[in-house]
Amino acid sequence: MTFDEIVNAAREATGVPDPDKDSWQEGLQILLRDHARADILTEKGQAILKRRYVNALSTRMRVDDYIRRNPAVLDAPVERPVFILGMVRTGTTMASYLMDSDPATRSLLRWEAYNIAPPAAPGMTRTDERCLAEKATDEQMIKGNPEGVATHFEPADGPSECVHLLAQDFRSMMFTALSTTPVYADWILHCDMSSAFEHRKRALQVLQSTNPGRWVLKMPSDSVFIPWIFRTFPDARVIWTHRDPYAAFASSFSMRGKSRLIFNRHMDPDYMRCKWPLQLSLHLRRPLELARERPNAIYHLYYDDMMADPIGQMKQVYGWLGDAWTAAAESGMKKWLDDNPQGRFGKHSYSLSEWGFTRKELEPYFADYLRVHPVCHWQGGLIHHPRSLSLGQVFGAPAPGADTAGAGKFPAADFVAHQPPRPAVPRLAEHAPVTLFPPVFPCRYRACRASPLCASIKTTARVIDHFFALRGDSREDQKKHLPGSIFQATERKVFRKQRGLQPADGGSQFARGPTVKLSDTPAPTSVWIRDG
Image (cartoon, rainbow, N blue to C red; front, side, top):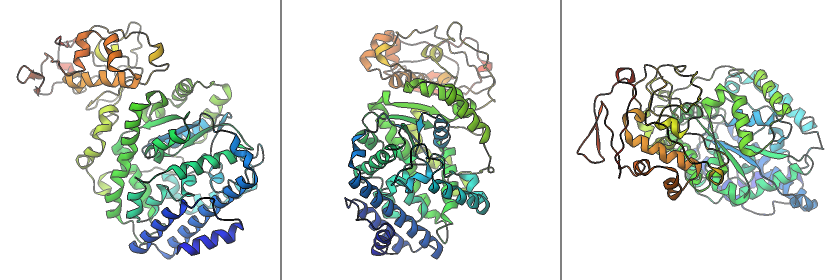
């Protein structure tokens, strides 16, 4: 498999000129050098990858040729696209399928990813002959690889990942998963993605020229490339899915690892353990950093909430987007949920130990993320957050009239941390001042061990920070909304008097006493905050 073989095969397949720009060459050359050095591909795997590379280049050539002959397609902007991203295996697929069920939504369908030009005729996105041919292939895939389908399956006429569009510039995270490509795996994390995102935009403009709509696009690795989203689509909105990163990590390794046997003589777990932890951690690190700069452009969608109440969560997403929630959207989503129950194609089992990892080894990769989004599960117990948690509820009793019917409904667990409150919309410009209720924290969960919110004022102060960070408030804004003593708490000049926690030296350092159950402590649990 050589560079010239791939280029010549693409030229022969299309009969059109080479792409307008040569940005695609660098990534392809790196991939081919990695394949030669690793020498791990089977004969079948090499044939499949060669066909994929030829298809990617052929599609790029057809898109550029179509635009040369139809330049007017670039006059129509891609307006307010929605990008669904997050760490792999965090619910991005479910979110994209739910939103695709709304007739007003325009998704990139799997069959379209490599059949962009010419675009489908108006109203024919799911009845185009090319789509029907791909659907026939799906039936064979389900019968021939039931285990792989149970792990992850995208029907031909369902929403797919834009990873395929980036692959047409040979700058795609997908290639790092298929085989052992160590140099490419490092390069893709740091290369300039401008040309790939520009091609992505042009492809969307071709597709929308005959079948317009508001784009909802899903790609977990957009998390790593998130700066280029806003450089290419300045009015983009981002939905960031959140799930226990340890569970997502294990699920991702299982899904990717098993698929590698299609192409390679063995999985090469050493390569996986060397390259993928950093890659997956950057799926969290980079959006975390950008969320501080653009808090109003990112919506936080939590996996546990979506699994518990998908329709309710979608209503909140639509409210944040400012889109109309219609009967057609709701009925379409309910139908999709009925037709696609979890485990429809079988159960996907996975664990960290299967891949030689322990939670302790992975903590450095996820620690910063979990400080802001504490969504992990611990020792089999569920770490969950009270829904619609207000700042008053974080520091005090439930707000007057609050619904407490759900108290105690979750399983007993080692309760490590509460989820930070949801981003509120509209944001700061229309905020009402924060109302703080009496400084009492009655734990809603029976028989759970004291959480940091109940046992460490440091975490209490951190949650205040998170509340205002998610709202987008500056430190000056916080001074306006918070009493001075609470504001000082966010500066870590605080202490607490309660059984199980003693001031170490009268200062801000604390020594934790014995862990106590909330059921053993007097109610209410008082929190004392020192002024200044």
